[in-house]
Length: 367
Length: 118
Image (cartoon, rainbow over all chains, first blue to last red; front, side, top):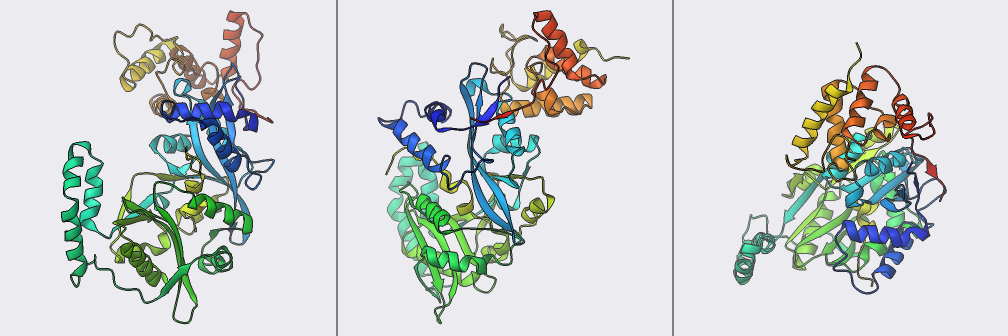
């Protein structure tokens, strides 16, 4: 009988090898790859900040004692109507290609039998979603909707075409012309690609401000995150690690009386779409915060922004001409507490990418 | 009247051949091949197989069925389904198989997942 057990430090080399196999990195990994994996697993899945005796990452051993499956789990704290609840954020769900079958189902079953109040994976592909659903999990359509807001439409079209091999060289040749088209579009009155100068001002967001103001901007939500100095510092550092997606910006928006209207976290990606991690605002300030974000990104040359829908602001995002799409990645959840699930199904949860798997991603190259 | 596993096996085999595109001349495929180890069915394939079994044979498969040693071959799956339909516990089948193989009979928790402290 093959047990599912807690992931421990001694498992790192085997799990690292499994990860490389599953993601086909064996041929491309450079010298020092094991050290890179060791640092990653220790920092993320063996970090005492996110682990406790009852909640840990899991491995599946086959009858020969080899690790053929892994499920990364970290513990996060949230408040449900003021009550502290324990959340398991799940990531890096991998099974050896030659050992599939019930391994994944067993790992998910073991996860669901844990002591957490709620299990979440928010970057699930279709295969993962179906496995979770087969064991009693459910997809959350509202939090699986993503939005895209073009800022430079011609260059956005170009960046999409560049990824299609037959059209890549043609797309590159059209580069200068698309910039002219976008410049003209930005100068025309009454067109949505002209970004007006925002009414409010912005400055760098620091952790103290974030911690002090988060309750105000999440107060109306039934389910909301709970951070302390250490956990916030950790997620923001992980989010800010150098990555292909551009420079990480954290901007707090203030009104004319210096009162905080909200903030946003996003990546200034000049080669593609700037990903938005989090937008915090209330019903009165969201339009101003969105205006600031759109302008901030536009003056820095971003061609489009994209983020995950916060259901509270669906109208405002729509009013700003964001395009909505659904079909992955999925947010899938499981809980034995119906009130937790209802809060999420109703869209009454502050669950941004910052709270999810985004900061748990693996990067092959160290800093 | 008890449901015979052989009839179930025929339908299950046809489903697996069709759904997982098993080549007609695949010599390695049989009703006794380990579907997972041989790579015919992966994790999402198991999900599809479960949906097929439950909707076709109107049976509810629990974890003890799905994670049992028997639930790895077409022969084993058909017997598990037959046992469910006939209202018999799965470990009766596993005990029978253990006896045939000369192994000690393990009647408890044939397929439960234990969390073992690492």
